[in-house]
Image 1: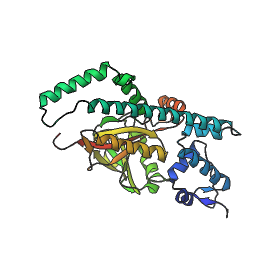
Image 2: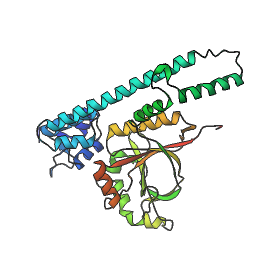
Image 3: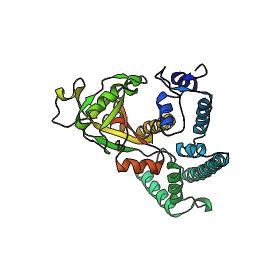
Image 4: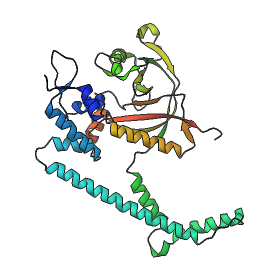
Length: 325
């Protein structure tokens, strides 16, 4: 037992959450050691080496699905194949970026020939803008195939590299709550999440067959709620408490469940997207996340997980219209 390292120490050493380590175990990427003497997970030298390998591959932006392929086979053939395809993907993106750069230069040259002046009135600007629109729609710039159709094609290909955002309305509903506690207390075995799910027969679905939401208070604290049927009373769920969830508009995108890097990228993408809209973050409500089709016996959930090779996590950022818009 002297050479074994606790999950908390691994988490601190490699800046990875305990939830992510547990997720890697759940999908078969990692193995921990338990004994009758301790209740927490321990890792030996082989497991630590595997964690380091996983983290290196994630830093190279290798998908969880491909990482599983790598570790499910012996030798280096699969990892070399995955890395070569990654290089091809990077080369494709570089090529697209060069094309986009050329298009931007062409736009600059075209605009510079127009010589807009301060004295130009609105009608002149409008007429010139319409003229430019017709030119870039119908004529290539400087003999190059860089018209609007090409611009749309290139930018669409680049945009597929990032997750799309959906604005959803989560309706108001009656729910029971764990209350605000540390993440460890909520999710650990026998914790508040376990207590909450003892009332499963009282729950009802809200969106995407989801019946629960986990709300983020800060890095250390959270709250989990589950929607319940309207006729449920406080005595039916005691000692849990019933609350009224107000719902509202949310900017939503999908990440990989338990994958911190994917979650962070998606969260940042949502924030960037909001900045370019007439929405702003509603600071009076909390960020949330959950899993669609949560029931593992649900045929949709099974098919989705088999098709993707991972579980989806939905990230919800509360939004509202900007003042005066």
